[in-house]
Length: 280
Image (tube, rainbow, N blue to C red; front, side):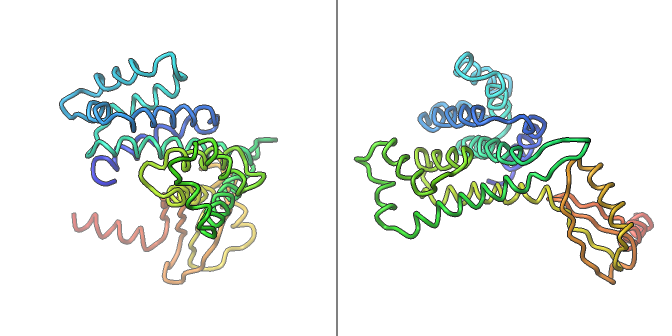
């Protein structure tokens, strides 16, 4: 996915973020069910990605299809996706799949996140556990040609395939089971393990939101590190894991990366900005 479709997905994920602290598996299941409807009708996909239709018209079409059948939240999420611009009809389905999987991943994240006495507890544990469960499932499938054949056997029922898949990861969390179910029942043209790998990568990427990669020009004292920890926790609203790296070439200041976001307060950054101002 690239170009305008990538931009639309980024916007959709940004809009979704506010609702993720209260995300539920039922919401994800509703989104996956709508995805199945989209996948079953090429005409519907074309209608929802037709550039000649306005966003409002496409959102209205979504409402006419799902209102009363899913929650208002699921309807709104899919309506916003439909109203966006997509380079290819399949991109809308791919985006909805990513959004639904992100909701599942957020449920795992929230399971290990709590607030007490004003302090948040890292959600890394839930995310790491989910990623590990998905990896275990992929290993179990990859290690058995018999299992691989069973998961694509056209004569086998979906329930039989799903029962087999779940048995491969005994004690798997509800979140892992939800993603495994989607990969088995509706792999959307991919091998099951390839889709699971995609879901695992989404979980791994979300873990980066809990890790601050800090670069400084010289080692930090304990007091400085504690103040930085408090400041970053306050800025991001969660208890971050801080990894500190010393780079004398930085000259001074500090550079912080949390996920895709970079906060650069180094002397080199300020000098570079000054040079751009002088040149401009």
